[in-house]
Amino acid sequence: MRGHRLARVPRLHSLGGLRVVDPVEAWVQSAPLLSVDELVQVGDALAGRWSTLGPARGRDLAELVDAVERAHRRPGVVRLRAASEWLRAGVMSPRETLLRLMIERAGLPRLDVNMKRWTASGAYLGRPDLSDGRRKVAVEFEGDGHRTDRRQWRRGIERAARFVDDGWAYHRVTDDHLRGPLAASFLGRLARDLDARP
Image 1 (tube, rainbow, N blue to C red):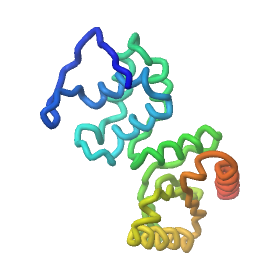
Image 2: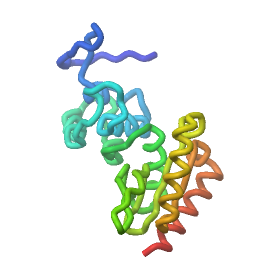
Image 3: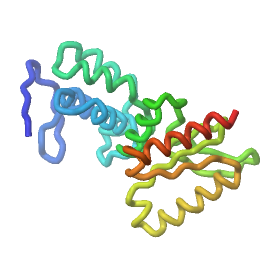
Image 4: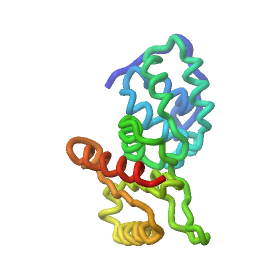
């Protein structure tokens, strides 16, 4: 565990009887302690909807960018600036962030995050983690909940079938696809689908 000291004490809030800083301030303070990818994961969480702590979710991206600009001389600000370039709103999990970063850093087109998709006739398909509606390409990260929760597993299979029936290329990926040979294979398949679909 590493501690740190601030020259200026930020405004504190009470959480469960503890005095804490605002979640965005905590993100800025964590910059010297976390990697760029970890800072992106935390920033995506702040701008996303999956945190169980109300003040730590649904924050506006502009607020995060402003916090980075105000941190111009604070420790870790270079890392924080690098992370802020990759932030996206609407991300639902830390693994989604890593998947998105891998795809974007491979030079592939930027995909929409958790956007609801419909057929041409108006039937609801689902909300894939990442997708390109024009090219009809979807990517879904399958965490352990997809494997261990029978209901979630069945819903995932049916959702994938709906997309495929509507002519989508539907990619299901796991932790194993985030690194090594499986990452390269997945990125190759995704690139081919994105290139092949006008």
